Length: 289
Image 1 (tube, rainbow, N blue to C red):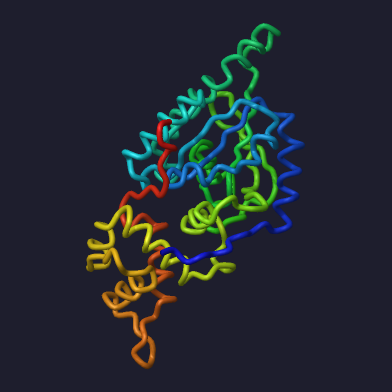
Image 2 (cartoon, rainbow, N blue to C red; image 1 turned 180 degrees about the horizontal axis):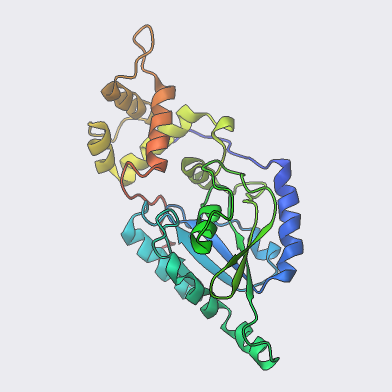
Protein backbone atom coordinates (compact mmCIF):
# COMPACT_ATOMS: atom_id res chain seq x y z
CA UNK A 1 0.00 0.00 0.00
CA UNK A 2 1.37 3.40 -1.01
CA UNK A 3 1.97 5.95 1.72
CA UNK A 4 -0.04 9.16 1.46
CA UNK A 5 2.03 12.21 0.49
CA UNK A 6 1.03 15.86 0.22
CA UNK A 7 3.06 17.10 -2.73
CA UNK A 8 2.43 20.76 -3.57
CA UNK A 9 4.93 23.29 -4.85
CA UNK A 10 3.94 26.66 -6.29
CA UNK A 11 6.59 29.31 -5.55
CA UNK A 12 5.85 32.96 -6.22
CA UNK A 13 7.90 33.19 -9.39
CA UNK A 14 5.45 30.81 -11.10
CA UNK A 15 2.67 33.38 -10.79
CA UNK A 16 4.91 35.87 -12.60
CA UNK A 17 5.72 33.25 -15.26
CA UNK A 18 2.02 32.55 -15.85
CA UNK A 19 1.37 36.26 -16.46
CA UNK A 20 4.31 36.44 -18.84
CA UNK A 21 3.01 33.51 -20.89
CA UNK A 22 -0.46 35.09 -21.09
CA UNK A 23 1.08 38.38 -22.29
CA UNK A 24 3.56 36.92 -24.79
CA UNK A 25 1.23 34.35 -26.37
CA UNK A 26 -0.30 37.19 -28.38
CA UNK A 27 3.02 37.52 -30.22
CA UNK A 28 3.37 33.87 -31.34
CA UNK A 29 1.87 31.76 -34.10
CA UNK A 30 1.92 28.47 -32.19
CA UNK A 31 2.91 26.73 -28.97
CA UNK A 32 5.35 23.87 -28.50
CA UNK A 33 4.54 21.93 -25.33
CA UNK A 34 7.33 19.67 -24.08
CA UNK A 35 6.23 16.70 -21.97
CA UNK A 36 8.18 13.94 -20.26
CA UNK A 37 7.69 10.68 -22.19
CA UNK A 38 7.88 8.76 -18.89
CA UNK A 39 4.79 10.60 -17.59
CA UNK A 40 3.06 12.08 -20.68
CA UNK A 41 -0.18 12.94 -18.88
CA UNK A 42 1.16 14.05 -15.50
CA UNK A 43 3.71 16.36 -17.15
CA UNK A 44 1.02 18.31 -19.06
CA UNK A 45 0.03 21.45 -17.19
CA UNK A 46 -3.80 21.62 -17.40
CA UNK A 47 -3.66 25.42 -17.10
CA UNK A 48 -1.84 25.77 -20.45
CA UNK A 49 -5.08 25.44 -22.41
CA UNK A 50 -6.33 28.73 -21.01
CA UNK A 51 -2.90 30.38 -20.75
CA UNK A 52 -2.01 29.84 -24.41
CA UNK A 53 -5.23 31.28 -25.77
CA UNK A 54 -6.11 28.46 -28.14
CA UNK A 55 -2.91 28.72 -30.19
CA UNK A 56 -2.05 25.61 -32.30
CA UNK A 57 -0.15 23.12 -30.11
CA UNK A 58 2.77 20.85 -30.99
CA UNK A 59 3.41 18.14 -28.37
CA UNK A 60 7.07 17.18 -27.98
CA UNK A 61 7.55 13.90 -26.11
CA UNK A 62 11.05 14.32 -24.64
CA UNK A 63 13.27 11.75 -22.91
CA UNK A 64 11.97 8.93 -25.09
CA UNK A 65 15.36 7.25 -24.61
CA UNK A 66 14.37 6.65 -20.96
CA UNK A 67 10.74 5.69 -21.60
CA UNK A 68 9.23 2.31 -22.43
CA UNK A 69 9.10 2.32 -26.27
CA UNK A 70 5.86 0.30 -26.45
CA UNK A 71 4.07 2.69 -24.14
CA UNK A 72 5.53 5.70 -25.96
CA UNK A 73 4.06 4.36 -29.21
CA UNK A 74 0.67 4.01 -27.51
CA UNK A 75 0.85 7.61 -26.30
CA UNK A 76 1.78 8.83 -29.76
CA UNK A 77 -1.30 7.09 -31.17
CA UNK A 78 -3.45 8.58 -28.39
CA UNK A 79 -2.28 12.14 -29.10
CA UNK A 80 -2.77 11.72 -32.85
CA UNK A 81 -6.35 10.53 -32.30
CA UNK A 82 -6.84 13.86 -30.56
CA UNK A 83 -5.60 15.51 -33.77
CA UNK A 84 -2.43 16.74 -32.05
CA UNK A 85 0.82 17.14 -34.00
CA UNK A 86 3.30 15.05 -32.02
CA UNK A 87 7.08 14.60 -32.13
CA UNK A 88 9.19 12.06 -30.21
CA UNK A 89 12.67 13.28 -29.24
CA UNK A 90 15.62 12.78 -26.96
CA UNK A 91 16.83 16.35 -26.53
CA UNK A 92 20.07 15.35 -24.81
CA UNK A 93 21.36 13.31 -27.76
CA UNK A 94 19.37 15.26 -30.35
CA UNK A 95 17.56 12.19 -31.66
CA UNK A 96 14.35 13.26 -33.38
CA UNK A 97 15.01 16.99 -33.10
CA UNK A 98 15.90 17.25 -36.81
CA UNK A 99 12.20 16.73 -37.57
CA UNK A 100 11.16 19.76 -35.54
CA UNK A 101 11.06 22.36 -38.38
CA UNK A 102 8.85 20.07 -40.48
CA UNK A 103 6.55 19.47 -37.50
CA UNK A 104 6.22 23.23 -36.93
CA UNK A 105 5.36 23.77 -40.61
CA UNK A 106 2.75 21.01 -40.41
CA UNK A 107 1.27 22.59 -37.29
CA UNK A 108 1.22 26.09 -38.82
CA UNK A 109 0.46 25.25 -42.45
CA UNK A 110 -2.68 27.41 -42.32
CA UNK A 111 -0.67 30.32 -40.92
CA UNK A 112 1.97 29.97 -43.63
CA UNK A 113 -0.77 30.11 -46.28
CA UNK A 114 -2.28 33.13 -44.56
CA UNK A 115 1.05 34.98 -44.62
CA UNK A 116 1.61 34.03 -48.26
CA UNK A 117 -1.81 35.42 -49.21
CA UNK A 118 -0.81 38.70 -47.60
CA UNK A 119 2.41 38.82 -49.61
CA UNK A 120 4.53 37.85 -46.60
CA UNK A 121 6.13 34.73 -48.07
CA UNK A 122 9.11 33.70 -45.95
CA UNK A 123 7.90 35.47 -42.83
CA UNK A 124 9.50 33.86 -39.79
CA UNK A 125 7.28 31.70 -37.62
CA UNK A 126 7.23 32.45 -33.91
CA UNK A 127 6.70 29.56 -31.50
CA UNK A 128 6.48 29.65 -27.72
CA UNK A 129 8.09 26.71 -25.88
CA UNK A 130 6.26 25.76 -22.70
CA UNK A 131 6.39 22.94 -20.17
CA UNK A 132 6.71 22.05 -16.52
CA UNK A 133 10.03 22.55 -14.66
CA UNK A 134 12.91 20.21 -15.48
CA UNK A 135 11.24 18.69 -18.55
CA UNK A 136 14.18 19.53 -20.83
CA UNK A 137 13.00 22.73 -22.53
CA UNK A 138 16.35 24.49 -22.51
CA UNK A 139 18.23 21.38 -23.63
CA UNK A 140 15.77 21.00 -26.49
CA UNK A 141 16.10 24.64 -27.58
CA UNK A 142 19.90 24.46 -27.47
CA UNK A 143 19.90 21.34 -29.63
CA UNK A 144 17.52 22.94 -32.14
CA UNK A 145 19.47 26.20 -32.22
CA UNK A 146 22.82 24.43 -32.52
CA UNK A 147 24.43 26.38 -29.73
CA UNK A 148 24.03 27.03 -26.02
CA UNK A 149 21.25 29.57 -26.32
CA UNK A 150 19.43 28.85 -23.06
CA UNK A 151 20.72 27.99 -19.59
CA UNK A 152 20.58 24.26 -18.92
CA UNK A 153 20.29 22.54 -15.55
CA UNK A 154 18.81 19.40 -14.04
CA UNK A 155 17.22 21.55 -11.35
CA UNK A 156 13.59 22.63 -11.72
CA UNK A 157 12.96 26.33 -12.16
CA UNK A 158 16.21 27.43 -13.85
CA UNK A 159 14.73 29.51 -16.71
CA UNK A 160 13.50 32.63 -14.93
CA UNK A 161 12.64 35.00 -17.77
CA UNK A 162 11.63 35.06 -21.42
CA UNK A 163 14.20 34.89 -24.20
CA UNK A 164 13.86 34.63 -27.97
CA UNK A 165 16.10 32.16 -29.78
CA UNK A 166 16.49 32.27 -33.58
CA UNK A 167 16.85 28.84 -35.18
CA UNK A 168 17.38 27.75 -38.76
CA UNK A 169 14.48 27.15 -41.16
CA UNK A 170 12.81 30.47 -40.45
CA UNK A 171 11.62 29.76 -36.91
CA UNK A 172 12.01 31.85 -33.76
CA UNK A 173 11.49 30.13 -30.41
CA UNK A 174 10.46 31.85 -27.21
CA UNK A 175 11.78 30.03 -24.16
CA UNK A 176 9.63 30.39 -21.05
CA UNK A 177 10.03 29.43 -17.38
CA UNK A 178 8.68 26.03 -16.39
CA UNK A 179 5.43 26.29 -14.47
CA UNK A 180 3.42 23.87 -12.40
CA UNK A 181 -0.16 24.42 -11.36
CA UNK A 182 -1.35 25.39 -7.87
CA UNK A 183 -2.95 22.07 -6.87
CA UNK A 184 -2.29 18.56 -8.18
CA UNK A 185 -5.52 16.68 -8.84
CA UNK A 186 -4.25 13.38 -7.40
CA UNK A 187 -1.43 11.90 -5.38
CA UNK A 188 -0.35 9.87 -8.41
CA UNK A 189 0.20 13.00 -10.49
CA UNK A 190 2.16 14.64 -7.66
CA UNK A 191 4.26 11.51 -7.20
CA UNK A 192 4.99 11.19 -10.90
CA UNK A 193 6.22 14.77 -10.98
CA UNK A 194 8.32 14.17 -7.87
CA UNK A 195 9.78 10.89 -9.19
CA UNK A 196 11.01 12.63 -12.34
CA UNK A 197 12.40 15.71 -10.55
CA UNK A 198 9.81 18.32 -11.62
CA UNK A 199 9.27 19.12 -7.93
CA UNK A 200 12.25 20.08 -5.81
CA UNK A 201 13.49 17.28 -3.57
CA UNK A 202 14.07 19.74 -0.74
CA UNK A 203 10.34 19.94 0.04
CA UNK A 204 9.74 16.17 -0.04
CA UNK A 205 9.99 13.22 2.31
CA UNK A 206 12.40 11.33 0.09
CA UNK A 207 12.18 8.08 2.06
CA UNK A 208 8.40 7.88 1.57
CA UNK A 209 8.83 8.93 -2.06
CA UNK A 210 11.43 6.22 -2.59
CA UNK A 211 9.23 3.64 -0.88
CA UNK A 212 6.31 4.51 -3.14
CA UNK A 213 8.54 4.35 -6.23
CA UNK A 214 9.65 0.87 -5.13
CA UNK A 215 5.99 -0.20 -5.05
CA UNK A 216 5.36 1.20 -8.52
CA UNK A 217 8.40 -0.65 -9.85
CA UNK A 218 7.38 -3.85 -8.05
CA UNK A 219 3.94 -3.70 -9.65
CA UNK A 220 4.94 -2.59 -13.17
CA UNK A 221 8.64 -3.40 -13.73
CA UNK A 222 9.67 -6.01 -11.11
CA UNK A 223 12.50 -7.26 -13.33
CA UNK A 224 14.25 -3.90 -12.93
CA UNK A 225 14.42 -4.37 -9.16
CA UNK A 226 15.81 -7.87 -9.68
CA UNK A 227 18.49 -6.78 -12.14
CA UNK A 228 19.53 -3.54 -10.42
CA UNK A 229 19.15 -4.34 -6.71
CA UNK A 230 19.60 -8.12 -6.80
CA UNK A 231 16.47 -9.29 -5.02
CA UNK A 232 12.99 -10.45 -6.03
CA UNK A 233 10.35 -8.05 -4.65
CA UNK A 234 7.67 -9.75 -2.59
CA UNK A 235 4.03 -9.03 -3.36
CA UNK A 236 3.35 -8.77 0.38
CA UNK A 237 6.15 -6.32 1.25
CA UNK A 238 5.44 -2.63 1.72
CA UNK A 239 7.57 0.06 0.08
CA UNK A 240 9.76 0.65 3.12
CA UNK A 241 10.56 -3.06 3.35
CA UNK A 242 11.52 -3.10 -0.32
CA UNK A 243 13.69 -0.02 0.21
CA UNK A 244 15.31 -1.74 3.20
CA UNK A 245 16.07 -4.85 1.12
CA UNK A 246 17.73 -2.69 -1.52
CA UNK A 247 19.74 -0.89 1.17
CA UNK A 248 20.86 -4.25 2.54
CA UNK A 249 22.05 -5.36 -0.91
CA UNK A 250 23.96 -2.10 -1.32
CA UNK A 251 25.43 -2.26 2.18
CA UNK A 252 23.95 1.07 3.26
CA UNK A 253 24.20 0.80 7.04
CA UNK A 254 23.98 3.34 9.85
CA UNK A 255 25.55 3.05 13.28
CA UNK A 256 23.65 0.53 15.33
CA UNK A 257 23.03 -1.70 12.35
CA UNK A 258 20.00 0.12 10.95
CA UNK A 259 19.69 0.47 7.19
CA UNK A 260 20.21 3.91 5.72
CA UNK A 261 16.86 4.39 3.97
CA UNK A 262 17.51 8.07 3.29
CA UNK A 263 20.63 7.21 1.30
CA UNK A 264 18.92 4.34 -0.49
CA UNK A 265 15.94 6.51 -1.45
CA UNK A 266 18.29 9.17 -2.84
CA UNK A 267 20.15 6.54 -4.88
CA UNK A 268 16.91 5.00 -6.17
CA UNK A 269 15.55 8.36 -7.32
CA UNK A 270 18.87 9.32 -8.89
CA UNK A 271 19.15 6.02 -10.75
CA UNK A 272 15.56 6.19 -11.97
CA UNK A 273 15.99 9.77 -13.20
CA UNK A 274 19.30 8.90 -14.84
CA UNK A 275 17.83 5.96 -16.75
CA UNK A 276 19.96 3.40 -14.91
CA UNK A 277 16.90 1.23 -14.20
CA UNK A 278 16.15 0.88 -17.91
CA UNK A 279 13.38 2.36 -20.01
CA UNK A 280 10.36 2.93 -17.79
CA UNK A 281 7.02 4.71 -18.31
CA UNK A 282 4.87 5.28 -15.25
CA UNK A 283 1.51 5.85 -16.93
CA UNK A 284 -0.35 4.55 -19.97
CA UNK A 285 -3.02 6.20 -22.15
CA UNK A 286 -6.61 5.88 -20.92
CA UNK A 287 -8.16 2.52 -21.72
CA UNK A 288 -10.24 2.47 -24.85
CA UNK A 289 -8.49 5.53 -26.26
